[in-house]
Image 1 (tube, rainbow, N blue to C red):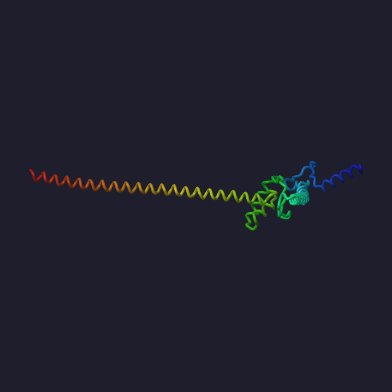
Image 2: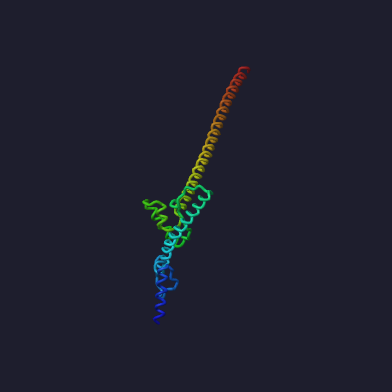
Amino acid sequence: MGIGNLREYLEEAYKTIIGIPDRKTRGGGGGDTGDAVKLRDGWADIEIVARIKESYFKIAKKKQIAVAIKILQLLGLANIDFKTIDLDVKFTRNKNDNLQTKAQSFSTLHGTKTLDPADALEMCDMTTDVVEVIDRGKKYWDNVAEQNLQLQKRTQEVLQTENNNTNNSNKAKENSGYKSTTYNNNANKISEKHNKKEEKWY
């Protein structure tokens, strides 16, 4: 019995150190959901372990790139004035878990108007490449604003053209009515003179 307890203790200890989540079902029920379950069963710890491991991978990758650049320089195949300190290594990982809560948190932080969108996005842990996501979003919304502006200009031009056509049509109708009235008045005067002549003849 003591050996079994020791085995379970060691198993729990190495899971805690390595950051392995506990997949065992909790006995006796319970109303924990969402972040409470992640914190209780160690799902949040694995994210911390992944971040720590990423730092070691980045150091190794930068050393590898520095060696490759040095070899190319010695062989005369490349003249690169580049330092690995200027290089940033990024690992793409899935950050879509609990996305609704993260989106709400980002909306709240951004709504305070005190944080940069990149900082708010990084705090919410929605992506591993914050700068690239922000740049793509900025380009997209700039293009949308430009398209909307062009559409608005075209709409104004069409409306202006229709107004001009309507005004020209109304002026043409007014001019046509004036000439017709003048012609009718002249015709009436001619007919009156003709009637007077006929009366004198009799």
